[in-house]
Length: 200
Image 1 (cartoon, helix red, strand yellow):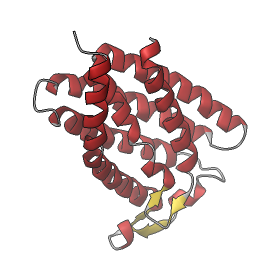
Image 2 (image 1 turned 135 degrees about the vertical axis):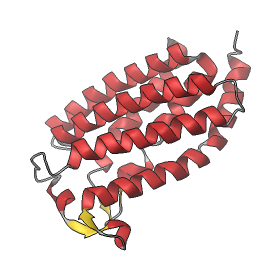
Image 3 (image 1 turned 30 degrees about the vertical axis):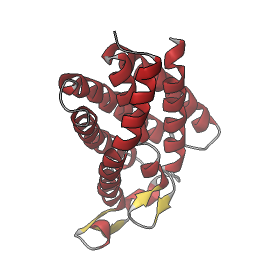
């Protein structure tokens, strides 16, 4: 279990940072959380490739529990909201476990196919769940999320939609870009870890 500690720690730190940073928009299209949260998929996929799906699920669960504890602490300090904490937990657990399953199905194909396909699918599910739970107008807003219902053009030029929907689309596009860019560190980290912990 000690060998998984770096992955667990990385997961918890990324989730906490994303929970806080998602509350701070960049213009009308993105939040700062869009640039941190996608790296959870890199952590999951590296663990899956090097140690297997059971280990990846352990890292996901440990990261989930730690992330929930950090989120509740942040909520208690007023750094995040209960809605955002719940949305993050539901989206994280669903998307990450889906990522693990898809990666495992494709693990014997070309080295890049499993991480790319699992991350793209997991990211789409994560974005849909997180933004709909955290900011959907059907749920009551508080002072930290009320801004999300403002009507704006989709991505600055499309039809008029609530801001949270524009943020969700922009967030997903960022995740797609990072999914492709993350293939480079994925390859490097996996090679280094496999030298240290060869698969049996």
